Amino acid sequence: MSLRSDMWKDISAAIASATSANLTAASAGNDLYECYVWALVLDAARREGATIRLFTRSGSPAKNFFFRTSPSSIFSTRHDYCHAEIRFPRSPILEAHIGIYVSGKSRVNHECDVAVVYQDEANTCRSNNVHPRSSKVVMSVECKYYLSSSLGVDLGRSFLGLIDDIYSNNRFFVSTQNAGSVDKLFARHRKEYEIGLSPLTPDLEIRLRGSFEKVFRDYQAR
Image 1 (cartoon, rainbow, N blue to C red):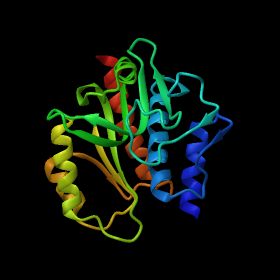
Image 2: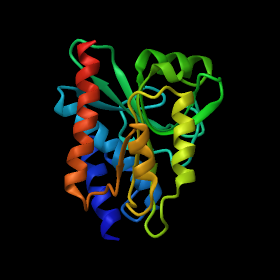
Image 3: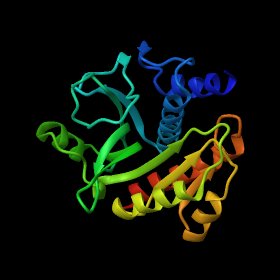
């Protein structure tokens, strides 16, 4: 329970302006892990000078924050799903989402556990019931919550195939589990990854957040 409780502390801090949420510290670990990484992304943006605000799918300030617990479209109205707005002083506004589909170069739709997209693109998608184009995704993160089993090479190869279709820059792979050989595969292909990441590994947290900060720093410099 400790790991989930620690993840929930970070998530709660990220959604502090909301009065309630559909997740708790007792929720499924894989759901909390995606939200925890999403919270790290928001923290990185804030450290780079962004103002963060929370909104519902319908555009209202999020008082009851509804997280996605299974992948769905950014335009889904099944629930009033929430997201974070990331606003830098002199750059186009961004949105940070959990568990949305993105359209790849091949026009095949892929799930992004965490995705930062241009707000203009997100608004167009919500209005026209289409998925965000991967070229409009500033950052994405694949999150794997593994506590006992090892990360196999096949999982890494699957990720490499995914990012080939949704562009390779600023596409991250993170996992709780540090056993296996997937890190060697990513290092050989020079991909962004952090294996063994959780609130229980603060040094890895700092390193990954620093990578996220660099993405936002470079974004503002364009």
